[in-house]
Length: 67
Image (tube, rainbow, N blue to C red; front, side):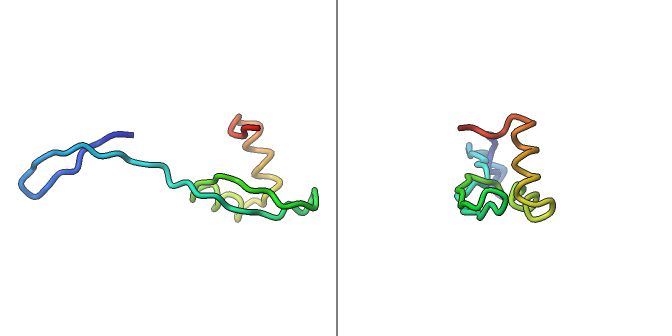
């Protein structure tokens, strides 16, 4: 997303709003293997809340997983 920084003098300069993504390694108990995901902070909270297996199934159903 693109927006503007607005200074105290109301001068507008262009800026970007980047997604909060990072690489995270998870142990998938159901398959007994380690996986690496590019995940956002919101996705990490979802995994902590409902578990890795349920979060991966939900992401696949909604079309967020890429091979």
